[in-house]
Amino acid sequence: MHIDIQIIMVIIALFVVLWLYFTYVSLIKKRNKVQEAFASVDVQLKKRYDVIPTILTIATKFMQHERSLIEEVTKLRTKYTNLSNSFDNIDEKISLSNELANKMANLTVAVENYPQLKSDQTMVVAMQTYNEVEEHIAAARRFYNSAVNELKNAVEIFPSSLIAMLCNIKSVEFFYASESERQPVNASEFFK
Image (cartoon, rainbow, N blue to C red):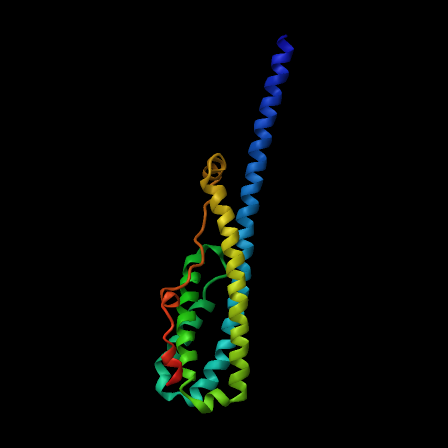
């Protein structure tokens, strides 16, 4: 009878150890999935920042009145590209990405006011490339937000939250639309 209790205790201890291990592995996989997803967003953002100089070079020739907007876009692009590729500065990257998307939207609207620029073939191709990259960024953000959701659930729901706390595994923020992207579109601006 004494041996039966020892075997039961060993089985329970083994079960607890295995549960702890598999919970830990699951948390690490979810955290790594978030980092992988953010790296995908980062790659798409890099493509965006590679296209922007072409757009700005062409736009500068035509848009003397929009000089300050072009300079703001250039500064934001430079600031983003100077950030390290570390996952530690994710909040700053998200903020800069949203700010730049807002300025590029303003630039796109401004291009509409310059018929010569709209008809320039190089500008048309550059803007099409930019729009494709923006679609890829949106898809990468959806994948990232899905991975963040899984990690948030694992980190916040008991009992895996205990393991996460002990291992210092934390959740990260979602990619949200910027405040300007949430505003309704004024269609009359496109017909000026």
